[in-house]
Length: 310
Image (spheres, rainbow, N blue to C red):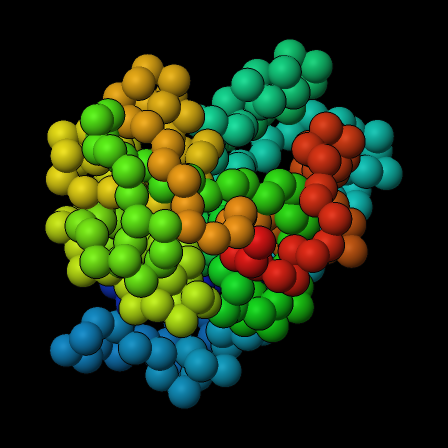
């Protein structure tokens, strides 16, 4: 079984759709169909069946899936071991990050890394935290940067993923210029209008947790939006208050588009975390990137267990 066929098989299994799988593996839909047919012919078994909700694995496909994942993992480790033994330092690394982390924390760092490692090609993918973890699991990215969640333990991400908290980003309460004072207790503050991201987004989790951990119901929202940038613009327009990581609104604060207001309670932070797959042998290019990050992105001491707490 050629690794290329196994990769295509897993893409179809995960997406349950030929079109989406074709986008993941960068092939035409006809090529994906041809590869699945070739794998089925080689194995002498049908791997997928059609259902209303999409393609579903047959019993043969279910049996193949974990083995295909193991084989591809071994294929990657074998290639990495050979590259390391041959003294190779070149290669490609793909980083995934939330948009605000990519622009506010990684852009300058990556420019410096690439200047010092011209033989390593670094690609950046921007996505939400859930998509980043899926891409990491599927091997589409090599390392992910996102804000960690207190309600998701390490086991949920899989024992084969390593993580390192590299910063405790402060949360800030922001308002439109001229907003005036805000209440000095959370219950009264929660009665005001707020703007937040949509449910499922890590920023929304941060927002909800800030009130829930104080035993206060989250405010009713004036708007649910898709990005921190939109939150900043709506806050500027007076639509409501916002509670977001400072790095996401530093530029808007510096321009005076929004102002920081006192948060009634202790200082709150969100853990900015780097996550990558554990491998017996790291590809040389990825190993150099992780080493550079370890040396220059200083980790916070590990009350990282006390996520979102003062």
